[in-house]
Length: 169
Image (cartoon, rainbow, N blue to C red; front, side):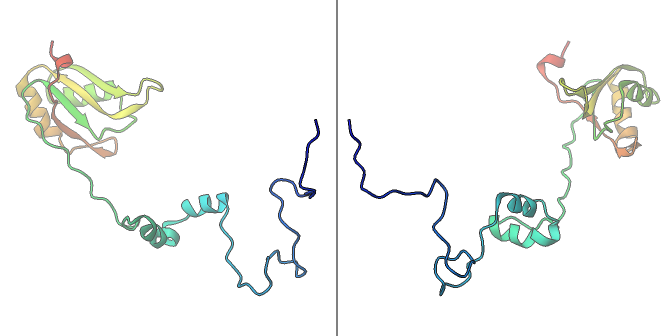
């Protein structure tokens, strides 16, 4: 079976452009204005990670967000009333261990249990923990004495733990 073609043979492969004009600049028309080149992939990536002073105005115009130079106000954790001996300890240093917490809270009252919450896959601390005190009065005293106290370079957030079904024994 014969294959019929239009008679034209194209030697250009995929993605090849036409022959350049005589000036060697690669423009199709010699009288056209110089068009800025479209940025390549890596140039756009570099611009994205550029220092905020360069690209902050562009970023704000492009996506309507505020300038990167403005700082975000930290969110205050909601205070939870102490109704059980279980306490939440937040803003914890990632280097803090359960024995560190045990020693810290033993200065206030008798500690039954201290548990630093960590990721399962790499055992790195999530930055918060739960401490079980002996009585509710000791838990209240621990909140008054240790809330906003500096511990391993960070100010602790100590409050009553929110009750959940699995924590009730």
